Image (cartoon, rainbow, N blue to C red; front, top):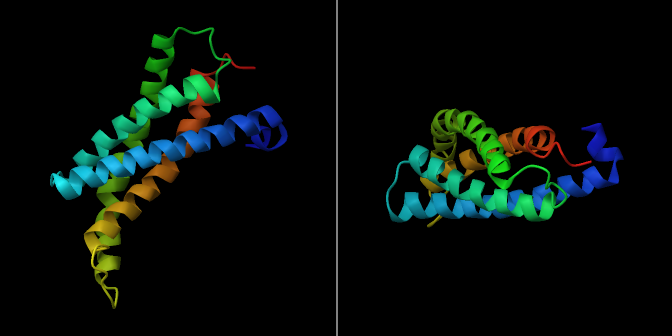
Length: 153
């Protein structure tokens, strides 16, 4: 973490990674909400599908914008490594979705007011996904930086 704060190149990469992650989060949340609210998918399945859509978006953006100087490895190798890191991230994420969604639901069902669209289901799904995204973000950055993109100076 100190390297990110002291090295301007690493700080720029981390900030770009955060921008890419934000784009991925929009893809992730949008896909998840579409699948859950429009097509009635269970959260854990919608979360897995939305995560894969975000992975593909993030790989493309990271390969060509965050780490454009990472070209010593073939794209297939990097995609495979990126995929492995993110599947491990999915293994971290899925229990978070399963464990924390009921906890957030119990919290939001007890609110003294209810908003028309922001139902306890909607809020608990999105707060749970936000928690999972934040935790997995740090896993993904550090493992990808030092394994997938370790050819970058």
